[in-house]
Length: 376
Image 1: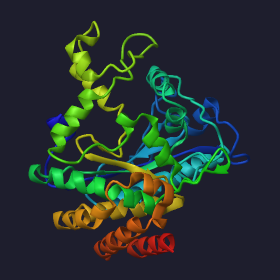
Image 2: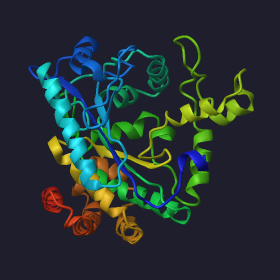
Image 3: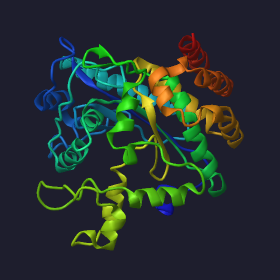
């Protein structure tokens, strides 16, 4: 766990993953089908959708993937330059948008499909097993898999003596970021009363798997303990049935809970089936942001990159976010109408704007305007 999930070194690289729900331009509430999606993506279709696809990267190197409900996602290559990251991903997202428009499809503009009931398009064993496991809890699992979209920002874990500080600061900052960029107030065509219904859905999908974990103590040991205590939802093997016995933890599997002992590959795969707000994947994957409209994904991406580029800024973030730490549900329900979150947001985004001053592209000004509009 320590060597694979928390690779350490000076914070240098950045990455971003953008997800969108996908809709017919003529009728956004009409169900999406696999054939339409396959035709639209052409040679970029992933093999989970088209087994013999060449799965070509997008023109600027980003990789395209498809989520279970037909959401499209582009993942950047890692880079040390924020400017390069933003320009490359913007170019690839524009290319994807144009390609989809030719097929009569448009990208969604919020963190949750506001119109349709969840409909799984990807018919692969992984998602069938996950669906079976999550259905025991309720509808939120299907919504999480098939109807949500987010902005995921990837940051280096940092030097060994700073991993805990960066891990804790990212978690403390989470409610403030959710509140500032909440963008999913509708589901099934009606207002839900939540600023980020996507966050509400994620928190309730499978709480041990999707809620934030503890941030006290050594994050590496805490993460390892959590992953081993986590139930196994999907067990790869020949055939189409990848289901696992309900409630079987990975630790129990190690100790003989199944006839076949798990391998290192089984552990690696198990780590891909957990979806907390911050996930350790060798880097720290920040998963708590709703998808944004247009190019607004640049704002939370730039803010996180700026706030975690320098360790002195990380320490300031931890202090500023401390009053709001743990207010995940408050953030999802009320956004910046919550006074505690609003006060922390003023301080944190003022710092982020100062750090972004000079980066170019009007990012600092755009971020300041966005936060001011949300606060008002």
